[in-house]
Image: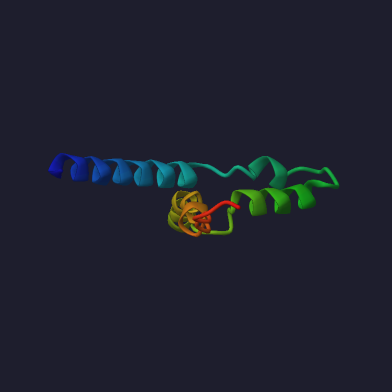
Length: 83
């Protein structure tokens, strides 16, 4: 049980570190910021919203980890008897 706990802590810590280093390393909107395309502003806003770039990377990581669990946690229980 102790090894399993250590495994979870190491996996969580390493994935958190790699996610944040990747998020900090570059700007995915750089090409759109200097574009002369008339639709660039709309595409930039859309990309920021889709990738949640207005949210700090640590919070984005926790949202990414918790979001798949929410439907499973709040799923209604199946009926006991199917009529």
